[in-house]
Amino acid sequence: MGVAMLDAQTLQALGMAALGCGFTWFMTTAGSAVVFLTGRDPARGKLMHRIFLGFAAGVMVAASVWSLLNPAIEQAEAQGVPGWLPAAGGFLAGVAFLIALDSLLPHLHMGEDEPEGLPSSWKRTTLMVSAVTLHNIPEGMSVGLMFALAATSSGAAGEGYLGMAFALALGIGLQNFPEGAAVSLPLAREGFTRAKAFVVGSLSGLVELVFGVAVVLAAGWIEPFMPWLLAFAAGAMVYVVVEELIPEAHLGEHSNVGTLGVIVGFVVMMVLDVALG
Image (tube, rainbow, N blue to C red; front, side):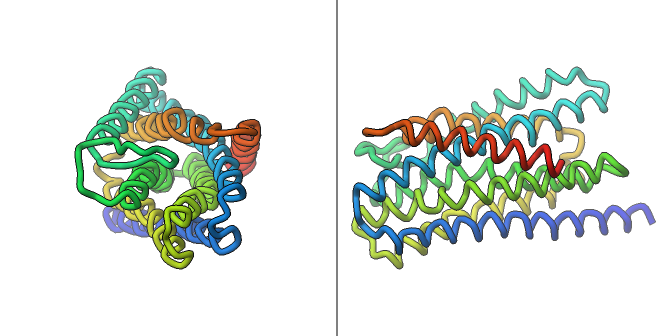
């Protein structure tokens, strides 16, 4: 009976996580379609690129605090562990994980000429898409973890975490719209046709669905480590923001648009999390 109930809860969480991560992927696809509006106009495309990156950075910072670190602290204290321990330890582990991936996975940041990671014969456009895929791993993990947390919690706590999971999926989805554009626009400037840039931009968000669903499938095994994993996802997201999104949002002239994008993204995600959580 208990096993059947657990299976039913897991299946329900799996369905909701697939829906939430499917929404984030859809928003990436919708953002990628912006390439049909701007084409290869360098000035217009670069300005929108900075705005979009700033907004994504703001959403990710707010989500890291309200949707990931706060629940990590709550879960740790409920387990009788000092809240700061898994919050700090998991956060640093997430940063270390992204540093390792950044050092090993061949990728190329937008606006750069020299690729990072291990030497590779990959094409320039493949390296650019690889860089964005790197961003999407912690985003997919964070959405999946919140739905897994909701599935393994009961009563009012479970309902609260479910609301936070939907808020996080909505927030990540909103920031995926500009992120999709941030993939397709540079690819168009690199010489891709608009259609090909759109398709590649859309597919760059598929990794979120994969990692989100995978985390829920492992919910039964990862439940004792949930505080650490939530903080891990937060650390990975903040690393992406500090290392890549904010610096790229401030390239060139009129960098204040990138700053305003960060502020707007932060406020939007904060309101969503407080209102729905």
